[in-house]
Each structure stands twice: as C-alpha cells, then as structure tokens.
Length: 167
Image: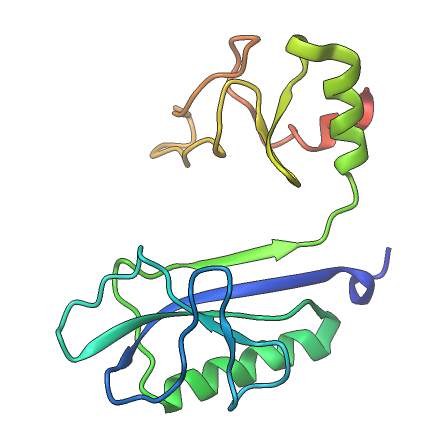
C-alpha cells in the first residue's frame, strides 16, 4: 500500500487566550474553524484545564487527511494556532487516528475464538487487547513491562498486531 493511500486525522488539545473569538463547539460536535481549511473543527474538551484564568481550552480536530498534502495541512494548522496564541500545558495532548482496514481480521478472531480471542471490541470501531479496555500502559523500564496481562497470562508485546494475520 502506498502511504498516500492511508488516511489519517489529528486532534490538538490547546489553550487559547480568552479574547480569541474562535467559536468552540460542544465535544464531538465542533464548529468549523473559519481561519483553517474546510473540515477543521474546534470543540470543547473537559480534560483541558487552563492553568491561568485568562485562557480557555480548545481541541482542534482535523478532517480526514492523506499523504504529504495532509502533513502540510497539519503544519499550516499548527502555525495558525500558534499565531492566535495557542499554547499547551500538562493537561493537553494530541490524538492521531490512522485508517486501518484490518478490523475484519480482529472481528473474525473474536467471532471464531469467542472468549479465547486475544482482542475484545470496546465500542464501535475500537478494540483492545483481551482483558483490558484501553491499550496497555507504557513500561517505565522496557525490561519490566507493566499493565494488564492478556487472558493467556502474557503481557502483550510489540507483535500483537502482526499476530492478527496468523489466525
């Protein structure tokens, strides 16, 4: 597959100055950002906590993007957010979604193996390793992984996704 065929999206959690007039819509129902390309939305996210009273939280959500043009659009968005006084603090994060059409393999394993499957469906379009509802926590020391163990008693390793195709 060509990298230009893979769709992706990104979300930036930021704080903006209170005087900024960008309309911020409700969570998952953001408003189009007039000063960004079509499809970019600004929405409220309660996990963003401004550290000073003169700022407000804002999550910027991209449309579906592809290839080098998509990366350039992200770069442009970051520049424009910075120009409007966008800043981050320890409560801010970023989320990247990558289109992956391997869901069929996961669903097939869940349907065939049932409770013995290595994966479980957590919500529409989202899956986790069996026995968890979120991805395992990053280890403090790579030699000593932490996080929940899968039903088979083993901590999922870096080959967990690759193992999907060995069903």
